[in-house]
Length: 496
Image 1 (cartoon, rainbow, N blue to C red):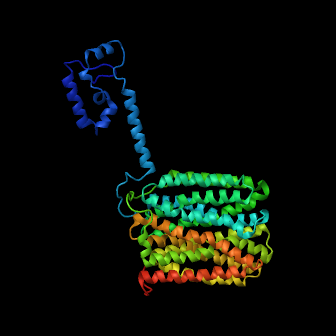
Image 2 (cartoon, helix red, strand yellow; image 1 turned 60 degrees about the vertical axis):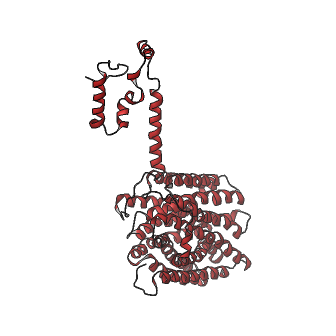
Image 3 (tube, one colour; image 1 turned 90 degrees about the horizontal axis):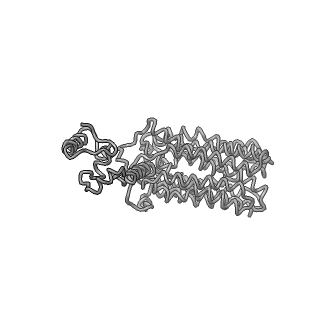
């Protein structure tokens, strides 16, 4: 006996055999009741066996007796759509995956997406020196005031991480990524119609900084969860996006500004970020199930001396780094009479030379420990920072730029992996990275304006601000050295 189709229902004599047939199918031919419903929705959702005489009469007049069928199908479709969206936008359905794969296509594809994230966030932020020099020449504001655009952008990119990092742990990475990308790209396009200091502050400073901050920290935390013994190398490779972005954006600004003007130059940058972030949204996905409970901030981290000393030390280092990145172009114009185009080349060089430093030191950090490697890196960085006082010619300026770019790139790329190494529970790495970056945000916010104010107080001379930057780096070396001692003692052979 074949199953009835459409409006053809079994007769009274056929009903017992048909019930038995359906039960056999559900037990052996179908994996679930839902699958059975998809093939014959009548069997569950409309009891044809209890139809009264009036309903049979309705059938006889060719009116469909199952008026509810379309609404039931819609409900099932909506339910399945909701399930698919839930799987895409959250990690609620993910089981515990066990230890990190530490390699493989899936893990390294996340590194590739992380590279694009860093390109679009810190590559963009670190290229601000090209805008700083252009705004200094075209806005009726002091250099210290103009630098607040870049520092607010920098601050927000760091600071928002305190909150967005916890959203990674909560399983909401994809919504973070979408919202942050929309805000950042919107800010770049609105820059193109900005003409005054305050308009640029709201668009380039606030909107792009806020957008980048929403998705940068969760992306760094996500990459860390895919690696264990190769974590420093993976994050180091991803941070080369910082250096490449720090070259590409200034080159585009340098080449396009004289040809198409500020508005269309900015729009080109907006379309570039839009395309790259669309790729990230399509492919970057978290690995761990959500940590459903726990505060946004992991205050217990500050009671751990290695973490507290380390983050405090990085604060002082960031104070110096962003002053140097923002003012190296202006220093070249004022000291050795560089043109605007040549001063922009300094920023490109400062970022570009850091590419090998973001790969080689992390490779050794995986073998020796990131904290063990970041301490001597900071010592070198302190020495190079003080040599800025001796720069007085074009040759010495380029030499300083190359050396400073090498050591700062090595230092910056080791920060996320060091924080991860100081986090025993990887389900909290998003929160701890966010706390560290939000602390550093205040250094990024205040460092360049402090240096600019010192420069203005000394009649445009740079030496006072240079001493400030170099001494801040020396303090950072002392604090991070203390973090290493607190973590592993005075012995030099212990990996940490």
